[in-house]
Length: 115
Image (cartoon, rainbow, N blue to C red; front, top):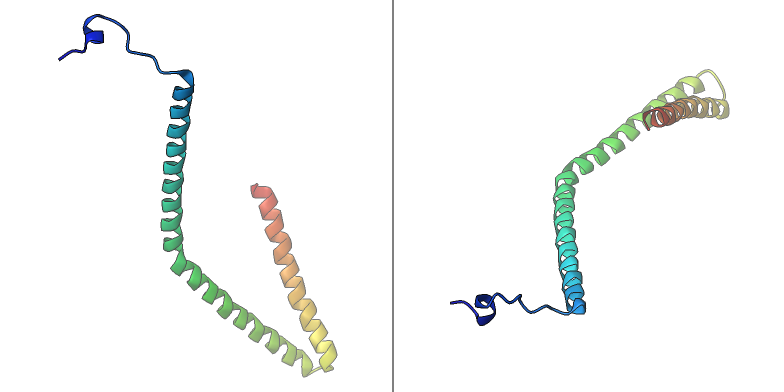
């Protein structure tokens, strides 16, 4: 059944501008909140998916560090067999420091090139 205003061809009653703006703001807030909830859900899913690989990478890093420490001790004791302990320690430090510095320099150059 048609309302009297529809049957007579009259336009629907207009809302005040303030009320329309208020509705627009409320709908914008609801939309922003929904988008934020979607982003939180996506981030949470990605974080859960990365938890185990990140833990394995941490363990890998610790085992690699132990290997490098063993290598450094091997170099130290090999040098200690032919020179004083202080000099062997200093030379071992310089060798591994130079390797670390070279790798760091290479990493920075690749970063600058790739960006």
